[in-house]
Length: 200
Image (cartoon, rainbow, N blue to C red):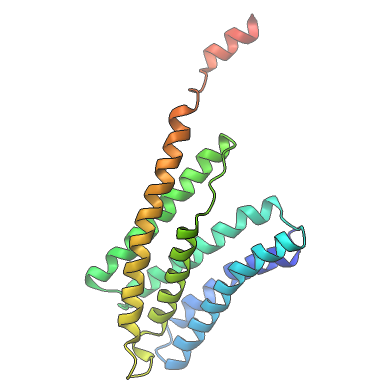
């Protein structure tokens, strides 16, 4: 199933990361626009791979594993490069930190709840967060190479703050739902207790 079209689209998001990162090192407008185009194409595949997997009944374990990882790698790499090349400075670093920390939190939460056989559904607010975040990062990738009459960096920065606010709220919402399952889950049995039960 790794070679199915939905999974190939997911893998393409990972494959495009080195290209986007490399283009940051080219101080030319065409490089910024190319990086933005590649990033946008990768974001579009995020919708198509899930849609096609469901429509063609090609949902797979590897696809469910790779899809969120591809998204997080793309976002993390882009935020780090934006900060490294001073397209995010001062207080504008804070929304990037919030977004990255939330991704780590939700990833850990999903991993733990998967052991309890509990899924974490994506809310409509989380989808809006992702959409605003993708658009904001696209603007920031172009940055000062954008048209003079359009405040590209400002639009991207405002969008990132909005995405960070939604990120914080949805992260707390996921954590609250996860804590409900964690508190209800029975404590793991110690090796000694398991051995005693086996001997009995």
